[in-house]
Length: 110
Image 1 (cartoon, rainbow, N blue to C red):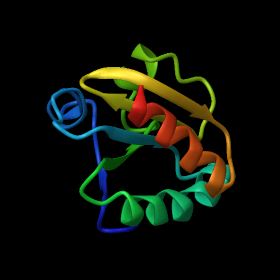
Image 2 (cartoon, rainbow, N blue to C red; image 1 turned 180 degrees about the vertical axis):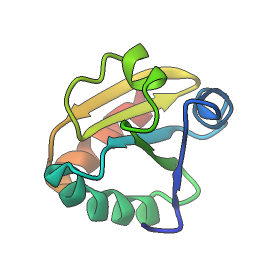
Image 3 (cartoon, helix red, strand yellow; image 1 turned 45 degrees about the vertical axis):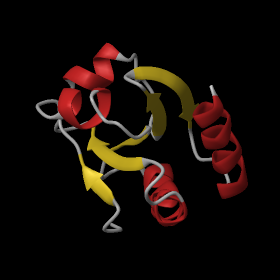
């Protein structure tokens, strides 16, 4: 896992994601999920490219169930983008890097 992608939990979700001054992308994943393992390096690359502009987190849905339930996460990987404490974008399933960049840029402008 890249240094720029930090673990987030149900316990620190509010302070790390909702109260963040920077926009936030959260990668909801589980260790047994193949597509989650495929998207992880792409998220790590994006975290390097958007360093200083956006915070990146991963949340293990096996260990944290409150936040995924709150946001209706039923399929993983699911990437949620928050800006100013509001949900601005959701991407479900594996997507190529250029698709993710486009969705991140759209959410940042929203």
